Length: 104
Image (cartoon, rainbow, N blue to C red; front, side, top):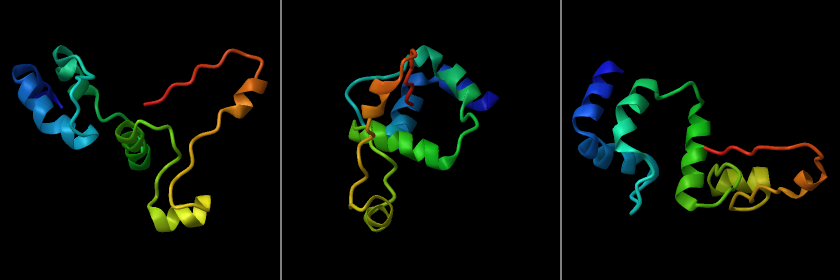
């Protein structure tokens, strides 16, 4: 982790251009402060399942809040359709307490 942090601090532009498109795809906008890249490298990856990370990437790339995409064959078995469904927030209207929805 220390070495990753050192590289990120020394060459943030290069590291960003090399690795972030692999994770989140190529975008025009920067969604990260390059000055913080070394700190991020020291603390990532945090404890998380591979499936959670893949789901986050699916949401980021599609820009849609959908359930996990297992692929057409498994989606058909689980969801009854080739595509994963959008999350439904209809039930949130019945909640009578403050709710903070955090994604990503």
